[in-house]
Image (cartoon, rainbow, N blue to C red; front, side, top):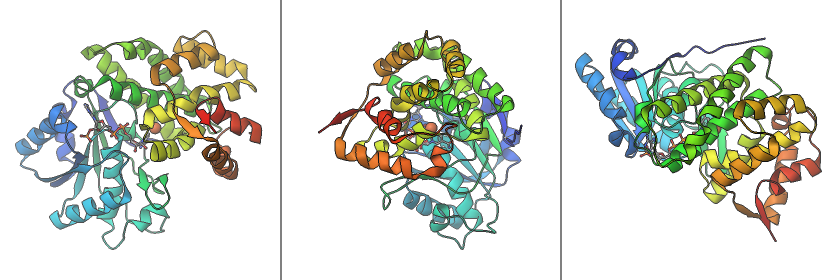
Length: 368
Ligand code: NAP
Ligand code: FE
């Protein structure tokens, strides 16, 4: 059994203001990395700025992180951060700004390196600058994982950075979700669900880390009906955030698995948001596992409050829909999965070519 997660995390009301001293302890010049507009509207940026003003901490803001951030954006941002001479980074927003902030923190600590070092690992890099993460979506758990996923346009897909960068501090407050459109809440909550299931069924799962994913799945069972409402109250918003952070803790121990891997090209080629793209593959993935071990998939359905995997599949299909791809794309994607031994190894049983194909045909609409 193993467990390692060095992030100091707080999930509470007014979290950022309550932990002004913890933020201050990270450094004297802050580089704030955020998306284009949402953090100005949901109050998260104001909360961070008021803490920095009170502490007299200098800062500069980079607010150009796009969804599914590219390595090019990270390079530009790191350059500006170096010019300012920041000694710590604050990532505010969804997974995109928080992931970008991790890669930026690596490049800023290693000014002689380019974005190339984020694609293939270098030995002997200095550790990333200290990072504080403030999430404003309820899905990625990036505030408590060491992962940074970047888009590589030349590869036509997304890849995880080869280094582990755990935020030093994670400040998690449900109130930032209150003004978010339900489409973003649904998509990101389904990402958290994917993290929980992919962690629980992972080859790397053990009794110790399953304590986290099983608790997260029970929490998800409590939030699932609110995803069909038009708006959230603060209690539900806090529970969504907690579920997302718990799901992040789960994948921080095991990593993700096949649905996440399959989602990357669907997001890149078909513009489907990260959470929906992962969610589309979830029920086929669970059914594939069920062929080998009904006990564990039965437990998952029980925690989530579904009678069986069919009921789970129907709920997800209604919640997030699906997308169409061509037969040619399908063949390419199946061949790619079957060629990725590392990813296949995250599933504890062997996957045949027919089963790999079913992951697509059972999840997406395949056209001639
Ligand atoms: P996101 O790409 O960070 O944000 C999606 C959209 O939501 C953006 O338009 C953003 O606006 C908006 N937004 C964010 N917070 C909001 C709020 N409170 N109210 C209203 N709008 C809000 O979405 P995400 O799903 O959280 O992150 C996806 C990324 O995380 C992907 O790149 C994925 O690969 C990665 N990921 C990372 C991990 C990990 O362990 N590190 C795990 C899973 C996924 P602005 O652009 O204006 O901010
Ligand atoms: Fe994810």
